[in-house]
Amino acid sequence: MLTNAVTTTFGPVIGAEHGHVRAFKGVPFAMARRFAKATPPLAWTEQRRCTDYGAYAPQPGHLDQAEESCLSLNIWTPDGAEHPLPVLFFIHGGAFVTGGGADYDGAFLAALGPAVIVTINYRLGPLGFLQLHRHGLGEANNLAISDSLAALDWVHANIANFGGDPDQVTLSGQSAGASMVIAIASLPQAKGKFARALALSAPGRSIMSADHADIVARNVLAELELARDASAIASTPLARLFAAVEHVGRRIADETDSGTVFGPVLDGTVIPREPRDVFASGALRDIPLWLGSCRDEMVMFLKSTPPAAMIRTTERNVRTAFGDAGWERLLACYRGSARPDEDPYEALLSDAFWHRPMADLARSHASAGGAVWLSRFDHRPALQPFLSQGPTHGADNACLWAHLPDFIDRPILKRKGGPMTPGDIDVAARFQTSLLRFVTSGKPDVAEAWPRFAEGKEPFAIFAQPFHIVPLNEGARFRVWAELSAGANDKKNMRQAV
Image (tube, rainbow, N blue to C red; front, top):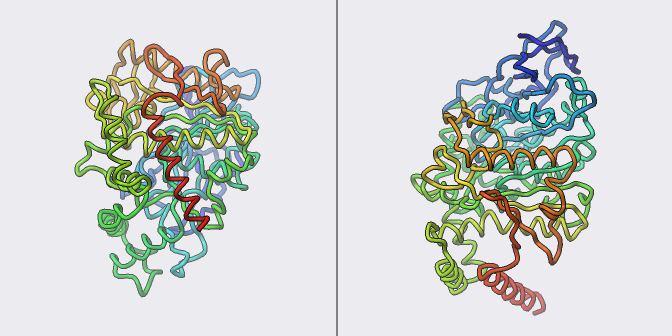
């Protein structure tokens, strides 16, 4: 059944009713030419039918999509709300090269909240992250960030017409999307357009330097034999462009700090400051922040064929920071304290690349006066790849978007959903309830059940059966990391003094 028309700044839209939730899919918020900053879409006067997802952002496996019209968003809003509802604005992950809003059906969360749920598309891979302005191709850069800001602007201007409260928007994302959240939250352009932030599994080193971005651009242009005519890349067939990026990635990923080729870039223009420095400065102290990760983040990347470059770069970074002796000391500690089902090497890498950077950001925000909560997802969903890999990267995301008692299909990633076990339902319900409480109130739970993170007291919520709180700053592993970090800082201070 179709909905009544809803007015937007570009024209009226109609969606579809599913039970007590109205869904508006594929709503255009911008349009873009290749390697150009997004502009407003062409306005329309007739009612626009928005009942199907829009075009995916071009990506491996989906290079037949219309790149100029991939910038759309999806809205789920409950019927019958007596007051404006809080809004969850979600930025998908996918290593900055895959994914889309169509993989996240927000109908269940919208009804459960009640809340308005928004998922977005943004340009991916070279179309969203290749920095070409140093090569004479326009002045636009960080296009994926600009796309997401345009979507946030659209929500701020229009969401009230869909029953949402534009002053109660939670900026949220997972994996690459979480990196985008941390970057966007720090930007002057986003100030006043969101009230809270949620980042799930943000990589520790996700902001690229301008020099790194330039190296990537030069390598891609050279791969395409366009070093002398960069402008021709604007008309290069997508299949050839993405193939060139894949070749460059295999060649230079090991040379990066993060093991990934793309990500938001500290360009001095769109992103003027390192986002973590902005959090540490106290500029965001009024923004409640929830940071989460999965217990066995690195398992998925260790089991990929070949193992992901971030495995090698993470070990290299730890060895560079603490020396070979420090690495061996850490590995010995992890071996001596490993669970029966735990791979000590994976656990060390997960802490180094995922968990510790999240904890450091929590400490920075808390020290600056901000309210912050830190969590880890330890439950193994009864769904592949988690059945075979445990609570690895994305386990929390699968439960967050589940339509209890079922996991949902992921059409872009071509992953099937399926029935949930009683344990899945228990943990997913707790996770969803905490998220919706955070979206509504800025707190994921009552203080007695889950205290906020604070200096000296570092409560760490574990989503498992049962849900429980443990102190983060205790245990043999924490002590070894602390001692090695203190030693490295002492050496750094001595060098600076000299």
